[in-house]
Length: 228
Length: 295
Image 1: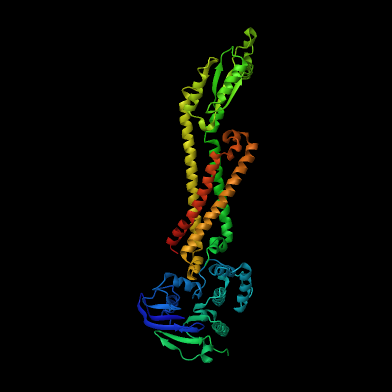
Image 2: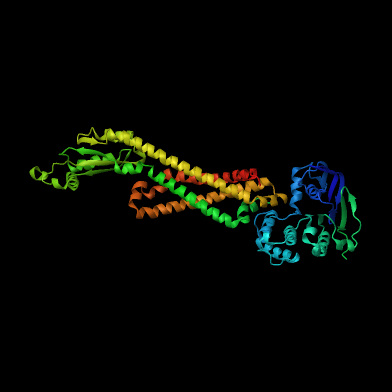
């Protein structure tokens, strides 16, 4: 479980938000929405132990990421995946290189296993056979889906995704929703940061978001939910 | 995250560039290894001079060949001597005639006018004024010896020239080592910069930066050791092949059987260790330089 207590963040233009209390249970899919420059990316960084908050603390599984054992944040990052808003910044790579890099981060993945999972994950995100494609030749949507596949490759327990739905495009929203629900059923936590909820999700009755500072928090799925 | 999976991380992330870089490193180290092996075998100018220079004990005319042989044997046993050869009066006369072909008439009047002599050549490592003086001092008091020729006043000047040339050669080697290390450092720096985004990717996924740095340095150290072993073998092989084809090379660097003597094996082992350590050190230094460079 990820819990943020009285978390605050300050930017160059002043206080972004303060006294934010958030909780994300295991096997839960949540979407945090907020206007541009409201600090969504910063919130994700704080929640995954990558940037110390200016106030408050983040606790994962009962252990503080910032005030306790310095290895706690690293251990949490090792079992989580992160999809940045602009992905990937890494060199002039091909898709295969990203999987190789991901396999280095998730030590113990054999070369054979890597190839099989590459195939499987790329097919799942609609990019079958794209292993040799250069990243610079891909569209924003394709890159976002590649980034998702690369992170799922290591089987993270928690997935942080910044603007993934926006970048992947509206046509992939339903597929991603199904995928996230499946991940939730496996007990994995997914946390998305978006400017807005996809229109299709609203029309299918996702409900009103819960206000939290400048953000609205939507709970998309939980571990015990029955698939519809 | 386990250590070994990061050991060859640069090879995993950038295999083609690493192969190219390793080829360059091999060439640079090969040049350095060849230079070092030649310097060690030749002792700079020592071997060449010891081949050219001899201490000559001219014997008296009546000295029989058996005594000449005995003196040569005694001289060969001296500490600084590498070889001592007795040349009888007949051999002396032949050498004289080959040098001065028109003077054969000298012999017709009263037989061979030339005495026999003993020619002593010094060991390359003992080609010093003191050792030459010791050989001279051992031969001069013998009743069979007429006079000893050892270069006289020219020798100190020659020694100074030799010392100067040897110093220049070793300074050249030090400069080459510095250049090679600087190139290694630049290669490491540019690679660390090129792979910076990949390392950030790993760091963001919980791989400690310290593990990356230590593993890369360990990998570079091992790669340096393997490379220096290959280079040392290749240098020795090339010298063996060239010595057969270029006799002059053999005279300058000496017999390659000496490669297996402790005086060469110890520096060769030091070379291996030094290359491995410098390769290992270049990795974190290059990393640090790349980190301080603006992205």
